[in-house]
Amino acid sequence: MVGCLILVSVPTALCRSPAPIVYVAGDGSGDFNCDGKDDHVQINQALKFVADNSEYTTVHLKGSFTYVINDSLLIGSNTVLEGDSTAVIKLVDNAGWPTMKPLIKQMSSSGNNNILIRGFEVNANHDGNTEFAKGKGYYNVIYFLYCKNVTVCDMYMHDGHGDGLRIKYGENIQFYNNKISMLGHDGLFAIDCQNVEAWNNTITCRTNSALRIWNSNNVKFHDNVIDSFYHWSAGGPGIQVERSAGDMNNIEIYDNVITNTYGPGIWLIGTAGAYDKSLSSVYIHHNIFYDSGTNPSIEWVGGVLGSGFHNVLIENNVFDGVHNAAVVNMYSTDNNAGPSGSGFTTTVRNNIIINTVPRTKNAAGTGYGVINRLTGSHIIVLENNCLYNNTAGNYKNVLSTTDIYADPLFADQSSHDYYLQSTAGRWNGEKWIKDKVSSPCIDAGHPDSDYSKEPEDNGNRINIGRYGNTACASLSGIDPVQSPEESVVFRVYDNRLREASSEVVYQDSSFIDVGGMSTGRYRDILLFDLDEYDSSTEVTSATFSLYWYYPAGSSRPQDTVIEVYRPAS
Image (tube, rainbow, N blue to C red):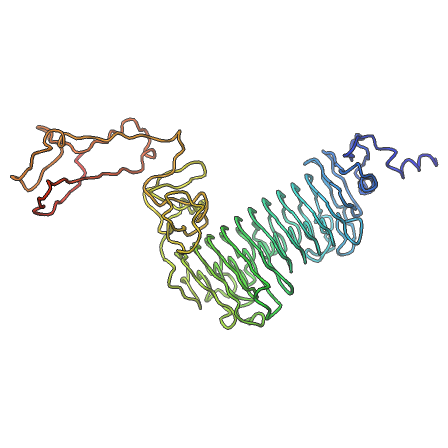
């Protein structure tokens, strides 16, 4: 009996896999084997083995199996915790843990470094633990303190009370390729952290936000898809940026799609009052917002809602059908004066703002394109935006001399295809195509904005909207960019009028009729033979050019009038 106990308590003796990976399984094939009950015991044995043996780096959870845990998993430095996509960590029913006790945490209270968590599923089991409310710190999936070089990727985390990854006083954090659905607070919450990046995540919010930072610096949130659902528990903003102290510079939010959020798409909230303007900067660009701000019980909804931040630039975004306003300066209610201090400036440039609708709560005075409720302390500068079909109008407490007011002519607004139509060429996701009309937003952006990433012909000026100054910007000139295999050479049609009568001057008639009739045929000028095209979409436009040549020294006696008409069928 004593010998058996020694074997169980010393997992090094059981490990048979070569370095650097040890395996945990539910079918008996692992170095550490679980039975679906108190599986944290064996997983923690594996994690401790890796921490104690430097030649090992990785604990791999085998699937298909659900590992039920009744205590936190403890991960050390220089460790990878990974699993098959069919491996599931599940919180036990009725766990009864105290607040801020997570499913996964670091071994050392002073922090661990170089941690990678990837590849498996976490079922935080909200419905099996309904004794606690969401958003109160219970059952966060991962909670780290004082940790550096942390990566969480390729995970599926769902149905919880708290955060996906909550990290405080951390550095160099990467959070990407994760699917997060209906956790109970934030998908990622970084507090007092440096160098945070989150990208390629798909997140459905519940209780609060998808991505959140507080008093953190050097942050990039990009290429994420964020949404919510219509329910009292659905949450707040898609992205929350919060400052109460310290340096919050180099915050960049770009290339995201943010839709149907219960609160605002992005919420910038500063609570520190007056502070040095050099201590904050936020750059929000090339995002798509649609239908955000559906919560019927709050006033603070919209596309980007902000207060208490200096140096905010909102540029080249599309806002479609958001509630309240696309960009709004306000605090929690219309009448709240917001933080103390003054001179908080937001520049709104090269954006398309359409179809804004009133919010549900206290709807009067809402539904504008842009609203400033904090006129005593906040300034909104508008430069070269396009506004159209906003329910209440374009502005409340703001003015612009450079914005335009026209239908932006999206490729397919109803399908949220926000490329701009162009007779010269529009990228449709696969190739360049020509439209019958061109958007007024092409070459209409701020004259000093960078346009160097737009393909030729770019008109030497940035487009307004999501794709301005990108490789997918709609074209300005008369011909689209074509790959060599798509190039088409057209024959110049030389007509009989030029061939037979190039030296003849017709002075005995005030007009020359060109065409045909039942008894004969007049000279034709130009013939388009379209028999080889069997679809009307294959030919989108044609150019008809006329040139006049006069002998040197001669003058034209009168104007030449060209009448073009459709022949009878």
